[in-house]
Image (cartoon, rainbow, N blue to C red):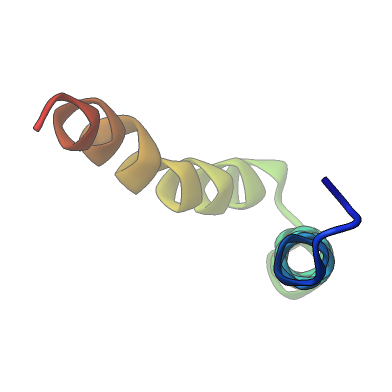
Amino acid sequence: MLRHRGFRRLFIAQTISRWGDTFNAVALVIVVFQITNSGINVSGVVALEIAPVLLLGSPASTS
């Protein structure tokens, strides 16, 4: 599959995008903890970050 130029470009772009998403999530947790010094606030931010996936993921997949 990586022999196809279009797929290879898509694969590389998606990989870079995922790295960026991961970096953003880790940085957000670090910044919230540094500002608030509270694990509860960090868990709240993480919960709010995944809430749309949990709430909208299933209905979106059924339509």
